[in-house]
Image (cartoon, rainbow, N blue to C red; front, side, top):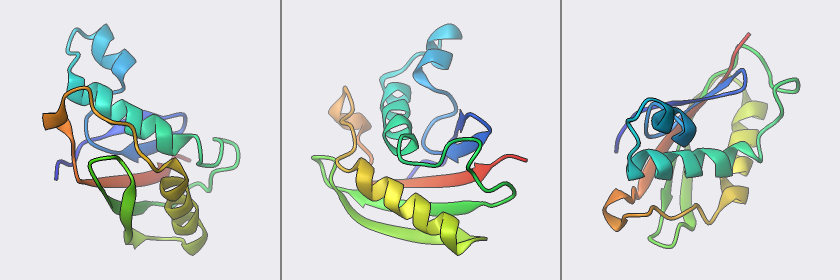
Length: 120
Protein backbone atom coordinates (compact mmCIF):
# COMPACT_ATOMS: atom_id res chain seq x y z
CA UNK A 1 0.00 0.00 0.00
CA UNK A 2 1.26 3.46 -0.83
CA UNK A 3 0.95 6.30 1.65
CA UNK A 4 0.69 9.65 -0.10
CA UNK A 5 -1.60 12.65 0.20
CA UNK A 6 -3.96 15.25 -1.31
CA UNK A 7 -5.54 18.45 0.07
CA UNK A 8 -9.22 19.37 0.36
CA UNK A 9 -10.60 22.77 1.38
CA UNK A 10 -9.31 23.24 4.91
CA UNK A 11 -9.53 19.49 5.27
CA UNK A 12 -6.66 17.20 4.43
CA UNK A 13 -7.25 13.73 3.08
CA UNK A 14 -4.17 11.58 2.77
CA UNK A 15 -4.84 9.10 0.03
CA UNK A 16 -2.40 7.76 -2.54
CA UNK A 17 -0.55 10.58 -4.29
CA UNK A 18 0.54 14.10 -3.37
CA UNK A 19 -1.67 16.11 -5.70
CA UNK A 20 -5.05 16.28 -7.39
CA UNK A 21 -5.22 15.81 -11.14
CA UNK A 22 -5.44 19.57 -11.73
CA UNK A 23 -2.32 20.15 -9.61
CA UNK A 24 -0.35 17.44 -11.39
CA UNK A 25 -1.28 18.79 -14.80
CA UNK A 26 -0.34 22.31 -13.73
CA UNK A 27 3.14 21.15 -12.69
CA UNK A 28 3.55 18.89 -15.76
CA UNK A 29 3.81 15.79 -13.58
CA UNK A 30 0.54 14.22 -14.65
CA UNK A 31 0.26 10.48 -14.25
CA UNK A 32 -2.61 8.03 -14.57
CA UNK A 33 -1.95 7.03 -10.94
CA UNK A 34 -2.47 10.65 -9.84
CA UNK A 35 -5.72 10.75 -11.79
CA UNK A 36 -6.87 7.52 -10.11
CA UNK A 37 -6.02 8.87 -6.66
CA UNK A 38 -7.82 12.13 -7.36
CA UNK A 39 -10.92 10.22 -8.44
CA UNK A 40 -10.99 8.20 -5.18
CA UNK A 41 -10.40 11.43 -3.26
CA UNK A 42 -13.31 13.13 -5.03
CA UNK A 43 -15.64 10.16 -4.51
CA UNK A 44 -15.08 10.15 -0.72
CA UNK A 45 -14.98 13.95 -0.40
CA UNK A 46 -18.54 14.39 -1.64
CA UNK A 47 -19.86 12.55 1.43
CA UNK A 48 -17.77 14.38 4.04
CA UNK A 49 -18.94 17.45 5.99
CA UNK A 50 -18.33 20.81 4.36
CA UNK A 51 -15.42 22.95 5.51
CA UNK A 52 -17.66 24.97 7.83
CA UNK A 53 -19.15 21.82 9.41
CA UNK A 54 -15.90 19.88 9.90
CA UNK A 55 -14.60 19.40 13.44
CA UNK A 56 -11.28 21.16 13.77
CA UNK A 57 -8.30 19.49 15.41
CA UNK A 58 -9.57 15.95 14.78
CA UNK A 59 -7.55 13.36 12.90
CA UNK A 60 -8.76 9.98 11.70
CA UNK A 61 -6.85 7.32 9.80
CA UNK A 62 -8.98 4.71 8.04
CA UNK A 63 -8.12 2.00 5.53
CA UNK A 64 -10.40 0.14 3.18
CA UNK A 65 -10.16 -2.83 0.86
CA UNK A 66 -11.89 -2.82 -2.47
CA UNK A 67 -12.42 -5.50 -5.08
CA UNK A 68 -11.43 -5.06 -8.74
CA UNK A 69 -14.85 -3.54 -9.47
CA UNK A 70 -14.27 -0.84 -6.85
CA UNK A 71 -16.76 -2.15 -4.32
CA UNK A 72 -15.56 -1.58 -0.78
CA UNK A 73 -15.27 -4.91 1.02
CA UNK A 74 -13.90 -3.86 4.40
CA UNK A 75 -13.32 -0.59 6.26
CA UNK A 76 -11.04 -0.35 9.30
CA UNK A 77 -10.53 2.62 11.60
CA UNK A 78 -6.81 2.58 12.32
CA UNK A 79 -6.71 5.57 14.65
CA UNK A 80 -9.13 8.39 15.40
CA UNK A 81 -9.29 11.08 18.04
CA UNK A 82 -13.09 11.40 17.80
CA UNK A 83 -15.79 8.74 17.48
CA UNK A 84 -18.25 10.95 15.61
CA UNK A 85 -15.66 11.86 12.99
CA UNK A 86 -14.57 8.24 12.53
CA UNK A 87 -18.23 7.33 11.91
CA UNK A 88 -18.54 10.16 9.34
CA UNK A 89 -15.43 8.99 7.48
CA UNK A 90 -16.54 5.35 7.66
CA UNK A 91 -19.95 6.31 6.20
CA UNK A 92 -18.40 8.51 3.48
CA UNK A 93 -16.24 5.61 2.26
CA UNK A 94 -19.20 3.21 2.32
CA UNK A 95 -21.40 5.66 0.38
CA UNK A 96 -18.66 6.29 -2.21
CA UNK A 97 -18.58 2.57 -3.08
CA UNK A 98 -18.01 1.53 -5.79
CA UNK A 99 -14.82 3.54 -6.08
CA UNK A 100 -13.76 4.86 -9.48
CA UNK A 101 -11.62 2.62 -11.66
CA UNK A 102 -8.08 3.54 -12.73
CA UNK A 103 -7.35 4.27 -16.38
CA UNK A 104 -4.60 1.65 -16.29
CA UNK A 105 -5.39 -1.66 -14.56
CA UNK A 106 -1.89 -1.80 -13.06
CA UNK A 107 -2.66 1.33 -11.01
CA UNK A 108 -5.44 -0.41 -9.08
CA UNK A 109 -4.89 -0.53 -5.32
CA UNK A 110 -6.79 -3.14 -3.35
CA UNK A 111 -6.03 -1.39 -0.04
CA UNK A 112 -6.27 2.37 0.37
CA UNK A 113 -5.54 4.41 3.51
CA UNK A 114 -7.17 7.79 4.12
CA UNK A 115 -6.30 10.29 6.84
CA UNK A 116 -8.99 12.89 7.45
CA UNK A 117 -7.75 15.96 9.31
CA UNK A 118 -9.83 19.17 9.29
CA UNK A 119 -7.48 22.14 9.67
CA UNK A 120 -7.95 24.80 12.40
